[in-house]
Amino acid sequence: MAEIVVVFDFDKTIIDCDSDNWVVDGLSATDLFNQLLPTMPWNSLMDRMMRELHSQGKTVEGIAEVLKRAPIHPRVIPAIKSAHSLGCDLKIVSDANLFFIETILEHHGLRDYFSEINTNPSFIDKEGRLRIFPHHDFTTSSHGCNLCPPNMCKGVVIERIQASLSVEGEKTFIYLGDGSGDFCPSLKLGDRDHVMPRKNFPLWDLICKKRELIKAKIHEWSDGEELEHVLLHLIGAISTQENNSSNSAQLISVDCKLQTMSTSAHEALPQPLSVPH
Ligand SMILES: [Mg+2]
Ligand SMILES: [Zn+2]
Image (cartoon, rainbow, N blue to C red; front, side, top):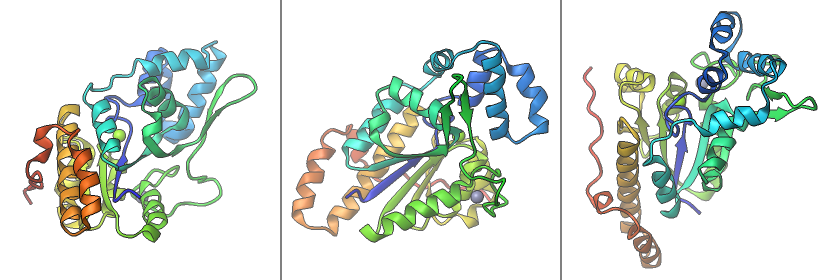
């Protein structure tokens, strides 16, 4: 039973680009995408773009090949594997879609490290066209959050995860993200949790402006190397705190796991970001 739950955004957090833009650009459909963007929600537009690409003879296999070339910082992969080996429960909350995310994770051998992928559903229809649907069906009802796009409120997802895990006892959440859609879930974190906003990205900007609304401790990062360093630091520090108030049997098992970490991860908890008001 993991005590630490690490929730990752996907685009510009795990991978170093936006997967939707990557596919559209990679299949030379950028002009049409930009032309249609003002006319429909992003999520609906991605489904429409898949229709356009299919009608141009672009296959799902071709889309997958583009996805496999999406940039990922080389330290992100070991960071995910280390967090998992330290006993953390890893989850994804993303406004991309399941096909894009699973294709990239499987390509890097990472799929099995995540217990949950919360995103927009997708499937390949009889004609071989990739279909992309909203996570939240906004045609029948609204999720009621005015911070988030109509197809997905990541805050609702976080609350669902918090509620489902609360029966196991208290958890410490670490949330990593970059985008404005990651602000709502950051607001749902409590004072024992941690948020890791990517520095100089929209989530970080929003947190800087509305610092007083965030109960979680804030730790910024800029690239995959810092992501790994800060995340493993935090996990080490949280585990140590838990061990101090826990029994010796657990202490031994966690100590063994800690040996797989770099020495830097044994240093003190990184200082929370101080944000000017
Ligand atoms: Mg993102
Ligand atoms: Zn929301």
